[in-house]
Length: 189
Image 1 (cartoon, rainbow, N blue to C red):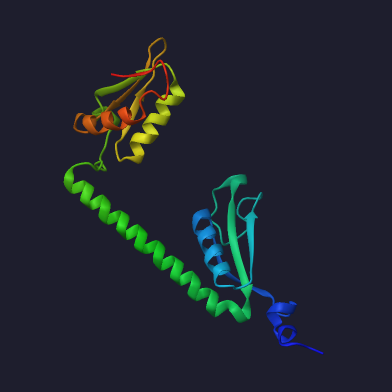
Image 2: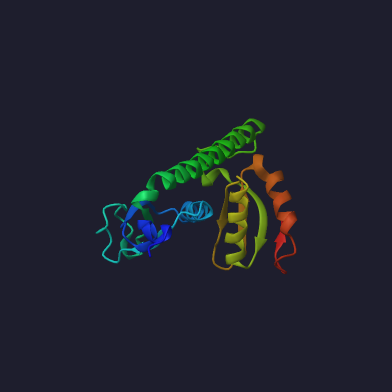
């Protein structure tokens, strides 16, 4: 005797999965999989790796042997409901981006945001000196995450040095003080 569950083609494999979404953004892929799963829509997810670099038309060329992408497929019968979930997640992502851009505009008005015309030659104020080149790069990354661009000066026989623009010196020093002591033997100038 056939049950209602058996009569549903999604449950017995009678419906081939249709491509719902494909892309290269791992964060978005994860958010979509979570949302579709939360909506209790059966899905097939896959990571597509193209060692021939470019044979998959959905993904841009130029990534060499590292081309990777993600796909989400659902049963044809679930395509409409799944597309609504995808649209909802994408709308939420757009709201987050808009909020971040609004925040950057506010930072720009207060003078904390970096000018798009930043030049390494403008970074003349030394804020850190030490022997560990990897730590210097890490500190520059931390500063960049806080919208402060910096450059590392590395010369043979001389300590590594980090420079920022004079206008960003106070903010940069505040950030370095927050992580000070993490690497013994190195110091803020």
